[in-house]
Image (cartoon, rainbow, N blue to C red; front, side, top):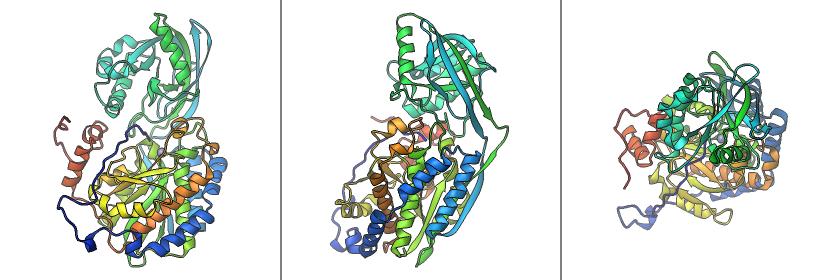
Length: 506
Ligand SMILES: [Zn+2]
């Protein structure tokens, strides 16, 4: 969904209790009996992988798949067919609805003065349209970093094309600004602004003449047209304004929002556990994508990684002690709707869940495991990570990833484990017209899929159960300590009641 927050938390191997006896030390694959099976899975994963073939089919034959559209429904059928061909059990679709559907029409803009040329824009998802045929107006800038004042001053924007800029120092963190931005969009619409230029990244986006589409909140739609403009065009507009010239723009944006909810579905298939089939580890990525290209890196890569991981385990003939449930989520891009729906639909069996394991940071190599708030699991994970050091050097931390399908599991007190990745190219392909198959290196995909297979199997097969859900109170405390309270509250997805404002950090 959005990928602006990252961080590291380090933790020693030994807990606060001090000395630990050798036979109590957490065991890795060398000590816990999982290594022979993992070696076979690694062989299948590296030498017999079809992950890149799956990604090619999804990118070329289905292409972009916005949640609730025909293409996305077709992708569900494709995913289920692949799971069946791989040999997973209990393959099925789990239907749910999202609040509204949306279809991109067209977005065109021209600079009329002081010079005249085409401007590169694309609509943000779940935003509206200009008058038919478009409209013309002077550009007025709005500072994202002063968004609360800008909301108060919105009446000045009548008949203007609004350009969102970032000047000075922000008074809140980015996610909080993002939450307030929705209020601004409603105020600008009420004031009669023509359109808003300003996507998720604002003027600090990455360049290469790319626009980056995306949603502007959790399950949020806006009547005013909002577009992402390329950094190059926006930079020129900002330079004109800085020398006192007011650009004039003609803009025509046409999109369609449905009047009511639309149906979608998560795709589910399992490898049933041989000893504790009722205990479940969820493993997945998201099947839905944006629509400016093929949705390869966000998150075709996660879909192909998940299918490749399932295939490696199936072909190895190894059966885990507990059930691995592979899930291709939809609705991720609209606000993690698929994983929130999963938590709701499986509420009764959540106490039997071990967590979820997600890959959704693009096309790069996996760099670290973010354990979704579960600091208690770092010592358990460390020997596993050490056992992989010659495959790929990885780190482990307890950070919560709130921008993908890990968050609903973290909120449920389970480890929502994010396989974090190297993102130097993802920042260009993320939600842009460059999100195509050409961006994914097959060897990196194969290795990521193998790492996912090894991690999933190790968690599901190790003699001791990895985790059970924390009680709500402990989870709420953890989310507050990780700086999630204000944000989740601002987006109306904080489920633990009003605990007062987050204490200020020193
Ligand atoms: Zn994604």
